[in-house]
Amino acid sequence: MINLPLASLVIIRHATVDDLPDLEWGGELVHFRRIFADAYRLMQTGEVMMWVVDLPGVGLIGQLFVHLYGVAAGLKNGRPYAYIYGFRVQPAYRDLGIGSRLLQTAESDLAQNGFYRVTLNVARDNDGARRLYERFGYRIMAPEPGIWSYLDQDGMRVQVNEPAWRMEKEI
Image (cartoon, rainbow, N blue to C red; front, side, top):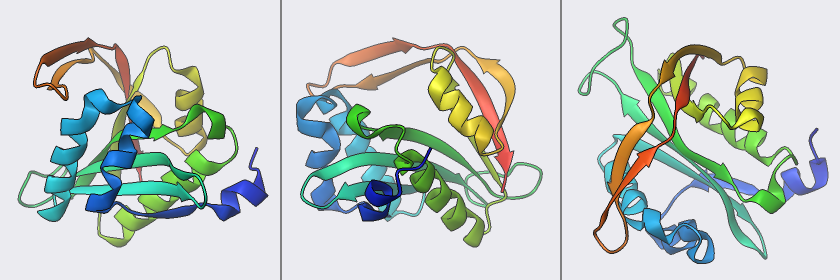
């Protein structure tokens, strides 16, 4: 259900370099500092799009990143497609329509830029997110092992094992 007053107050916009510290949500996501910096660098080269949700008086309460696959990076069925990652809304602001607005904004921008298909992975134990994606027309296409790694803020490699579902939608 959409809480129109709060959902209508947020500003959804592309990330700026000044947003990078705030993406860490007061230290909760500091371990993703390098991922955020890399995503921003790739946004500057046109390979990634980054949206943030800014609640005036509060700050950043959500984010969504999309890796773009087009002519230079590869095609799916001969057409560009996109991969959503880093989609999160702070827990206190979930189930208020903010994630829905953010996803709608991203899909609209992608469609306007010629992308026809969006894929994403959702953790198998994240039923709430899976239901959101299904309401938006995403379908489970395959299981994913969800094994990946990243460098944390101290340069230490962190291994992640998060079994997921690969979901897909044509936009």
